[in-house]
Amino acid sequence: IAKIKAQMPAPTKEIIQAEEDAKKFKGGAEFLKSVFTARYTRGAQVDSRLSFVTGKGEVKKGKQIPADFKSKEELLAAAEQKTTGHFEVGDDSLGGFLVPEEFRREIYQIGLENAVVRPNGPTVIPMTTDSIKIPFIDDSTHASNVFGGCLSYWAGEAKQFTASAALFGQQELTPHKLIGLTYASDEIMADSFVALEALIKTQFGRTSGYYEDDAFLNGSGAGRPLGIKNGGCVQSVKRNTVTQIELEDLAEMQSYLLPGSWGSAVWVANPSIIPHLIQLGSGNAANASGRNLVFITTVQDKPVWQIFGRPVIFSEKMSQLGTAADLALYDMRYYIIGDRQPLTIDVSPHLKFDYGEIAWRYYLRVAGQPWPSSTLTLKAGTHVYAPFITLAADTS
Image 1 (spheres, rainbow, N blue to C red):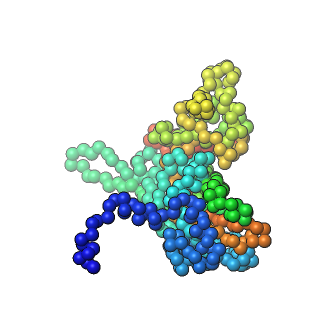
Image 2 (spheres, one colour):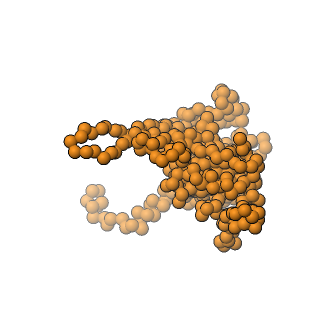
Image 3 (cartoon, rainbow, N blue to C red):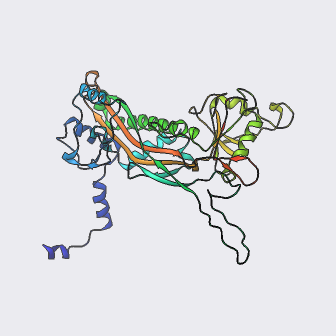
């Protein structure tokens, strides 16, 4: 046999590629059908291409895949055992089937369409453990040293050196669970898994992208990522007039932005401030007759907004006009995202059996928090600089 194998020609690139393609799902519809079959048959028919990721991040295949809950009562009973209303890390019941890369990319792309943070250059770190420590320089002032205690100086001949060292700190990234649920009628399931693929992509893409982005912007850090607005490196700027956006507010906010962020920061605003931005102008004349400082141009029939040359992104996730952070100036490079567990999907034919619906659930784990721990005072003066600037709610 060994001699026969040695005499056989080596497989061509085309044959190798065909063998690799045979190991992959042809599309999202085929993947979803395999997931449904595995759950509907209670594990009697499991596609060898399926990978199940447990709550601990362990990958299981074939007969190792844990069974689905048999009924709605069984699922609710398991949930009631947890005071938080969620399953704990490590429960296989909170795992799911790993979504193939191509299908997962399509879902993420839908989520990015209306996202603010991910599309604008945050620092993204892949996580392979449930916790990762990120070093940072504890740098709050340059009055007497730089980079948290590192000092260079001009020394005379035969003079004793003065030691200095940077003060490094550590931040711990801890992933949080984002879970979503949607239902598909028996009619959709009977019609086509292609139709189901479109439903899943839209529902999961939009909802996961929305809630993740909202946490990156506004999260408290308790059970979810710490949002930019609640970080320690945010500089709040007092507005001049209650429930107004004025040119002086914009100029003041720009003056607090780190000099190195001028070419990368973006303005983020609630749509309710649009009438105020449109009327902004310079000089002593009325705003409407002054020079328009919010440049609105048209590219492919779409308006493009800018303030002082930087893009403006409108999002309902920002506060309403007149409240804190209705307008902000953020350099997303200073926000860290830790991707712990990629998107997984699971299905239960039993949960809504009496309604004629199939329950589909997505699950992912992600961490997020601002990188710097504080604002920065430069060498000259007492003016504070930061990568994240927000407009305050009052004029006091």
